[in-house]
Image 1 (tube, helix red, strand yellow):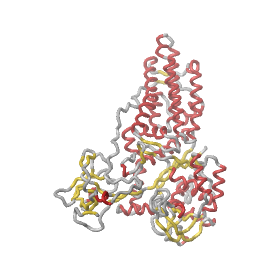
Image 2 (tube, rainbow, N blue to C red):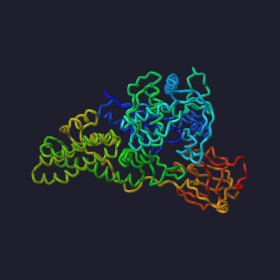
Image 3 (tube, rainbow, N blue to C red):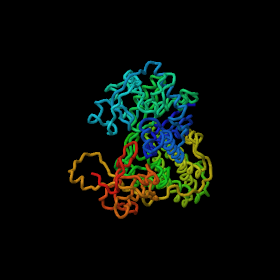
Image 4 (cartoon, rainbow, N blue to C red):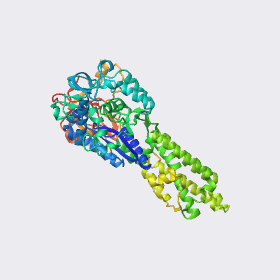
Length: 634
């Protein structure tokens, strides 16, 4: 039997899952379900990336050791995917023993081949991106070209991978395999980067410990693997590389699904590593775009990051899945707004899909006591059936090309055809004319078009499709795919089952708007101000005397802060994800004290707590030594 191997990136455990993680995972899940439906033996991998200096620092900032911190965040990813019904076959963690063995074996193989050598690295390293950069790549001689953060000058002993030796082989791969990197525009970016010349890659670090040690046989206990070498090996260690290799026959990967920010690692480093290991290259490395919210880039400081669990709870998981895969072409950036989601639910799902099922069941109840018989469908409606079959056959190619929006558009053409056929042929009029066989043929035509659509919709909306199938008296599985889609058969004689409306109309936005932010915002744009304007802000030291959570808020804590005044001030701060109330009692913070009081979720906030935030998380700005409450910061 043919095999398909589908992967998401393994997600870095520096934060909780957001809409970007959900988008990648839902695409991968839909693709895995699609191939299982078609009868392929499918292996679907996801998991978490848990090593590196950034994790070590993030854990220390929270008073945890790296493994404790990684366990905590990894569990959040797995819990969300389980809650979302993601059909993964294996959830890998880079702290798993079998992965460590696989990564160590890969290092040994590349070393033995002569692709790894020992030297000394001196250059600029971005902790946030876990990436090395040359002087020419830096912004203003110091900042990371990817994230804009200041890099660290690193000088240490290192093992290097001969990436430069694979430049020509990589370019030949891009030339020979048209869709090895998807979409085409991203492939062109990768080719352009490689043509600029590749430098050998530092693949070990000695300045921190949180990582996979080199094989003990080398006697290099101070070295740990570079986090990207460690992480990329997961795609083969998950199949047993370096251990039992029980699932290694699923390699090469059919699809590596990644965000566009990590495409370079997957389309340059990873295939070079595989060439060194004498392993086949992946069939497709596919990079999707990013999500904004209401046209704005998402950030914690703006309070507008989309929590996928919150969306699913408010609007329904399957509605959310449909929106993500219908709203934006793969590879392009997309925008999340509640209005757009509501429009999709009410229009596409409610009016066209849900209403069609209601009409079919309603008519069958009136005209035939819910009995459905396809016997006369071809006699009266061969043209419509042939048109639908052609659409459905063509639609599947879009799914295989990851054009999920076009795939769904094609499915909806069949739903439109069914709805239009009911309006055109008016079965109620046929009944009045005594032409019951023609009326029942129209109902059966519509039911068959809906059934066939539901089979191919099931990878995107599995539970909804199962409800439709149950109402129409059949089961969605590979057998029904082969009969209704491949074999172009019609539904056998059956009894329909009335069901509740699938998509109740959504009248208003069901999620609260992004909360006002209790931290200073930085737009990243340089705007100079005068000293007088700066000193207009009164910043004082305050001591937190009381702290508690704000009900119904995922972000806010309510703090009582002593600023040396007659009473403590009440200040709301969006730091709940980083600090427990108990841990804040007695700590000192910096407060903007002369802000106009503001209402946040119905509570008054009488100041602003200063924090600093980057990809490693958020931290309070605090005085180095204890100061009197109310001490001015100058």
